[in-house]
Image: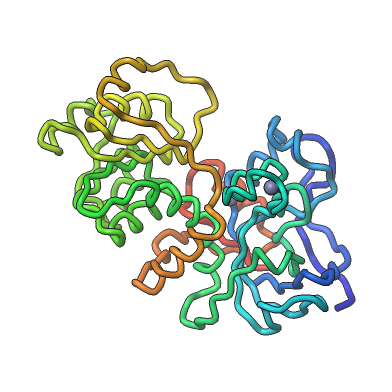
Length: 346
Ligand SMILES: [Zn+2]
Ligand SMILES: [Zn+2]
């Protein structure tokens, strides 16, 4: 396809410098597909790119179209593409692994050291069209699934990775932080059979939404001591698993204290600073701590298919839908935590 398109571009190696520009429609290579973007979601990473933090500085080489969470319709496929067809409704992994290193060979493509990310290393989805490799496209040809929800598969996958790392069936779980990923975590914990879901969230609006999504109890960790409160709700033993979606030092330190012996603290969000903990107390109880990076490729994607089949409904998490031109407002709201997920429509 030839012609031009509107796209949100990080234009310079400096803070700010994000503009709506008219640029050529990209052309797919032999094993790539061209997708007409129907919905794109704003992520905290896009806010970091605007601020130009050290993470973004180390990876980006502007000009780059930003955005990495989207859904769309396939409009063109390369000559060597076999699993995706024109007209397919797709969502996409945002990580492109090398598939040739030892880590990829060992089945851990989600932590491949040579990973390239769309919207970071190469042009992303805050645009009318995007080119992606065939292998990261996921086809969901169910028209009853709205484009806005299909755009959330990438962040949902991180949440599913964190929640399913330890099977929760008939177990008690603490979910720390009820932002969009924590909200997805509550839904996933319910669908995967958790016996008890305890949410820790100081923001009253998010606490109310957590209740609505199926939390059994919501604790305000500022108003009451979370260690005492969580233990009281779990017969004094603590939950089997705590999944942190907050990146809060205090939240993680408390979890290490209230976790049940042999329990696991799963870290989905990562704190900016280091935290100091008593390893001997934690280790004496046989507890473990686990980091979660991206989505397991592609087990978590197949699990999401299963969750959608079981009725997973992300509509309460989509709070704002804006035209692409209003990307600035989407970034502002995401930065201030004033929204669930904000969707841009190119
Ligand atoms: Zn993201
Ligand atoms: Zn690799």
